[in-house]
Each structure stands twice: as structure tokens, then as C-alpha cells.
Amino acid sequence: MKVTLSILLALATLAACNNKPPLSAAAANKLQALLDNKEYFKLETLVKLYNDSLGDEKKLYYTSFIDNVFNRNVDCINDVDLLLKNFPNQLPDSVKANMRRLQSDSYFKIYQYAKAAQADSSILKLYSKALSKDYIDDIKNDILLRSALKNTAPQQTITKNNTSIPWSHNKLGLIEIPVKCNATVYNGVFDTRANISTITKTYATKLGLHILNVSYNESSGATGVTFKTGMGIADSLYIGDILVKNVVFQVMPDAILYIAPVKFQLNMIIGFPVIEQLGEVHIFKNGKMTIPLIPAKSDLHNFALDGLDPVIALKAGKDTLDFHFDSGASSSMFYVSYLNKYKADVIKTAKKKMVGFGGAGGSQKKEVYVLPKINLTLGNKTVTVDSVDVLQQKIVPDEKFYGNIGQDFTKNFNEIIYNFKYMYIKGN
Image 1 (cartoon, rainbow, N blue to C red):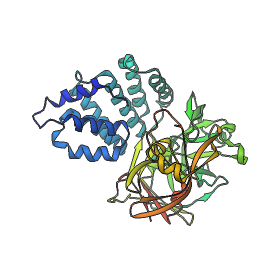
Image 2: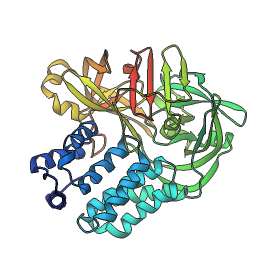
Image 3: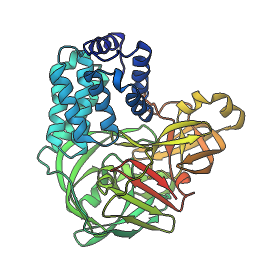
Image 4: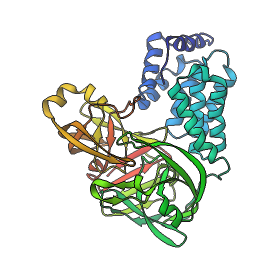
């Protein structure tokens, strides 16, 4: 979110309405810079630190984002409602639009599709003059998707016991799990960075999906390639003994999911909305996956969500850096943000190389720096990842994170735990 001087002045003016000691201009700038750069963990820490100096409106403003990224979606929705109700005249239209956009994201995460579409539509109706064309185009694309789902019942996951299932690597090195639908078992890629579960047209027919009359734009995280996709609903499917109802799938032409360089057809990808609703997932190196009935608490707090993209905080040397976390990637790669921050070290130790990147929609070749190795720390354990590609250009214009962490990192642990209730990732 881009913030102009007028927005900062408006927020500063709001603080003056409170009797508490005002927030300094330097502190206000620092908070906004952290938000703009999506440094959510540091933002949460500073909001707590400045609590006594933040007025009610600024608390709501920052807490809305914090609740959203740490998967407290009902709280985020309420935060935004209170902010817009209590301070309607102080906030610029561009800020109001961003708050409604945040609210729409939270509605979508709790499967309230009609309310998500309504929030997005209100942005175009009320604030379109304050928005860029690209911003408006993104909203219109999401409205297509969310409006198509407006009559779809919320996804529901029913877990009665601790569950254990096997997993295996496919030809691409990706984790696959057994998924049962209509008494037939299929293999589905387990992919935390798939914003929506995905399926080919051929498999959508096999599983008896209800195909919706919609077509919208989607892009591949690895390549940035944009393509058209449709949508379908599975009434139910099983992951082990866990029943998942009303599962939304992107329905793609088989060719989009065909990985030509290795002549391999992907057919089904189980994405974030299904994985998140499992609550907690343990992936063991020996090919076993367990889903406990009750998610466990932990002192760790290193997991966030940027929209529907998982984000993990890892220590790299003396710094703590935020990365995308992608169980559907066989290898890690660092973005241009990493190159810009550590350019001297990268140039000194890495070698340039042309590398192919594949994903849904096709493949590309890019010249990258290849780091011979890097040490990354998760919790109390430090592991070494070899031959990490460092990109020289952004994949998307608004790129903020330092890279994408894949299985070449997680394979160094005997067990990886994803916890979506208390928002941590743990390695043993």
C-alpha cells in the first residue's frame, strides 16, 4: 500500500484527538514504513511498544493489518468496521479503500464469499477516483471470482480424531498426498502457496465437480505468467479420515498444468484454503503426515499470511528476514530484495547462471546469481541450504519479501510443523 504525505498527516491529526502522549513523527513514519514493506512481525512488536502513544483510530488502523496477517480474520473485519464507523471523515478515500480491501481478504479466508465480493464492490462504488487503474483491475478480477462463489456454502472441515496419512514425492520432487473423492483415491500436490486448490479439466470431470460460469486471471508465483482459469466446487473429499466439504478448485486446461521440460502432468493441487482449515499439520521426513485433532500452542511466533501467501521469518546471519514459504517448491530462491540488501556479498561469493523456472502456465529462463550455500535458522536450529538462486528482477512490481523457501530447506528437518491457529512453523 502506497502512502502519501497527506495520509500520514491525516493519521497524525487523528492522534491529536486523544489525551494520551502523541506519537512522534519519527515513530509514525517508522510504523508506516514497516507496514508498507510488509514487515509484519516488526510492526506487531512496535505497535505493542507504542501502545500508550497510539490513539484509538491508529490502534484500529494498524491492528486491522496485524489481525489479518496473523489469521485473526473475524477480528480484522470488526477492526475495519469500527475504524470506518468511528472515524469516517478523517481518513482519505485511498485509506478507506485499502481497509475495505483488507476486510474483503478476511471475508474470503473465512469462506464468506458474498461478503468479500460486496466489500470489493463498495470500493469501486465509493473510492474509485482515488485508485490506480492496476488497483481497480485487481479488484474487478477478484469480484469475478468472489461473485461466482456467492451462493457457495462455506468450506467446512470435520476432524474427529488424530489423523495420519502417507505422503510421497512425485517426479517434480513435490509432496503428494492421497485425496479420496467419490470412493476413488487421487494424488494431490500439497502446496501451501497455491492460493486456491487447483485441478485440470479432465480431473474435474472425474471428481464430478460443479463447474461455475466464470473466467478470471491467475498468475504463477514462480514465473509471473498470467493466464485464464475457471472454477468448480467439490461437494466433499477426504484427507485420511478428515472430511472437507464445499472445496473450491480453480479448473484449468490440462495444458496449463503440463510441465513440458520434464514431460509431467500435474492433475490436482491441494492449496492454502484446505491446508489452513486442517489447523495443524506435521510433515515427517519418513513419508508420514499427521494432523492432530487439537492444535498445540507454542512460544514461537514466526508465521504470517500476506493475503493467501504464507510468510515465514528466518534468521540469516544477524538479520531476521521474511520469506514466502512454499511446500509446493522443490527448491528455494531469493528475490531481488535480497540482492539489493546483500549485493556486495552476493557478487563476491555467487556465480551467474541461466536457470529455467517452471510453473502453471509455462516456463521461463532467467539469469540469476547462484549462492553456493547459506545458513538459515528456524527456531533454535540452523541448517545449510546449497545452491540458492538469487533473482535480478522482480517477479511482480510490488514485491517486498526476500525470497521463497522450498523443500531444500525443510528436508533438513525430521519434522516440520505448520500451525495456522497460533501461527508458527516449527522444525525438529
